[in-house]
Image 1 (cartoon, rainbow, N blue to C red):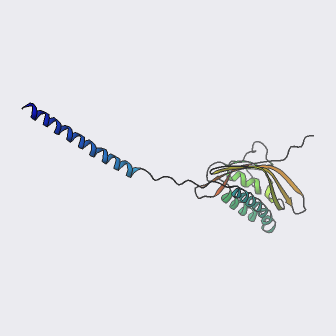
Image 2: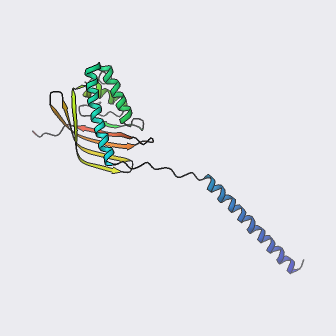
Image 3: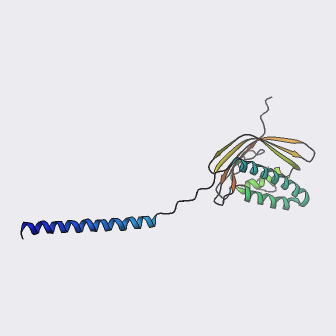
Length: 201
């Protein structure tokens, strides 16, 4: 074989290799593009107005539990409280960081729905110290926020909550709430810390 034919054969072989490589690369790119997942939709940021609305909804729910208890007894109050926990709290997302106002060790913290329900309406032998905070004759509710923190699908608030009973007595507590938007777009309470104001002797 002459040198001229050898060079021509080598050129043909190289050309074929380049073409094959180009085809392989194009196919790989096509497969990669087809397999790439669509960009996930991001949840809308939580707004201040949503936090304020959630606070008002919580207060109205507390008053409703109290009035349902007076009108229909513990069964009615418990049904309302369960509905509130299902719709407002994030027990569907995991443990809720709930430290109620009037709890003591070893049941200070209530990370489960059962523990929260017992705090609100009592009548649970597993939580014998709970008398049912929501069963007091509450009639009105107001908040005074010190600050609200917003960060994408998470928000936190801290401030005063004042509850008024049927006789006009006001109970004031220091309260911190944490919210997260769930997959359905709803705000869920995932942090709830409440305590009585410190009063130095």
